[in-house]
Length: 360
Image (tube, rainbow, N blue to C red; front, side, top):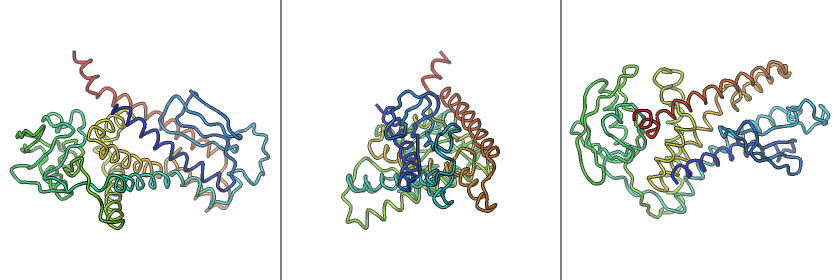
């Protein structure tokens, strides 16, 4: 059920991203002829009012197609309702609408939790281990998802985000040095030894952390507190996501090891859903923000890449030749599929059930 829940959440996030593009085009009267979730052969498709809706075999993303992309379209090339014939500002809105939809969805998910369930209760002492990366120091020391860490080298961590920051600082400053942590699991305490691995001079253990908040909620003291808490949580997730992608540029060797494909994302979602509704909400908000930031990158096939082409067109004062645009898109497709396959293979071989089969 946890895997199914994460699959449903991931599918909904992709749907809302593509729905952003679709609605931005439709409200401006721009012609659309396809709305697809996934790539490859269509498993299901249905045409409604000239738009073909489909679900495809490889659910690694999705796309909205326009008559502009069809060579054999019977629509005149000078039709004012074709996307390419619209002003740059209108096309920019269509391109950016997917990113806007994901950011808005993440914020609304957090708002929904705060409104319907209430705000999380005050954090307990220590930090909570959300996910553990296979083969990293956290896993080899015996830490698992759901463990609570109360102290490190005898120093109490305190509560909330300050506890997370203190724990991270201690780990980063203990590169290749053995440290001890007090772990709580099933209400039983145990002292574990961990040696953070050195990556670019910084200690890392390969674990995702969050404040130690239990699955209990309290009513909010009015709309102002809801907005304040949600805005703070959204800003924290957004800033951490930005820093993660910045690391791909400033420290690619270390950060690239943390890249996750669909298999790993689903596994993380399943682990977080074990923490209850708050874990699933956290997963939905985090992945939605990640989709928004990822698609903003100026890479082929991503929204950021299309926006880059649009900016160049605006500077040149005329469209970029079709051959160049096609080569740009095709290179992006090969890059995306190739990277996805590598990540799928890597993450699948790191699943615990696969490891047990290989090592038996």
